[in-house]
Length: 280
Figure 1: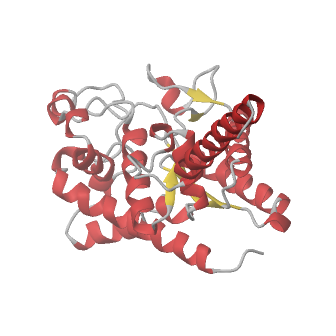
Figure 2: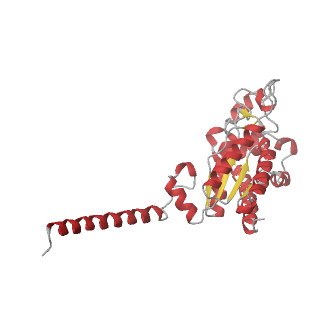
Figure 3: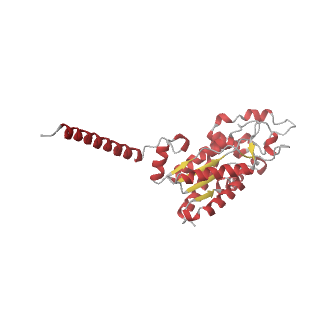
């Protein structure tokens, strides 16, 4: 016959065992790979991010955009809209890849006197040193979180040189740890797009360099509400600069979808080749 003390001891042992089982079960549930609601880091919980990383999602895309004038017919957030959509498609093509939030604040030239796009109200820029620091901190944060390949994809020309410098610097620093930072140059290279448009009968003047045919068509395919070609036509004959290089009037969403897909495919192929190569 058990004494009252022994009975109490058994009760407490049973309670302790049950609590331990509960802790183990809870830990297993947390560590189990959840059904991801998104591959966008800012839409995930930290538990989902950890589970994704632990199940092989060790590649992250860091998209960089830019807030700048895009003529009278396109929203200032053009670069952000385009690179966010492209990054998601590239990540889906690669598999086991997450996407960081878009970096909107990028170099736009001198402030005083204002240069380039900064001559137009609404453009927001930072110095190259600040942009370098942003990318450095983002990459170090992702490395601390256990990610191994960090891909910088920029939709704006002013981003490219800084991204390349940061990628090379950090990859050298982390080479012994097997962590790579990659500047995905093929995404911004529009030479193949231009060649295709020329072959289809568009002129180099119509294609332009900024807020022209390519930019406008791509944005129409991603966010048509951010484009209003009537505004371009209304200001076509104004003597003041409109901020447009080229002729966007022939742009269509169907054309833009084809052009953006070329960027996505080029970037996907470049990253796949990098992932397949041994880390040096």
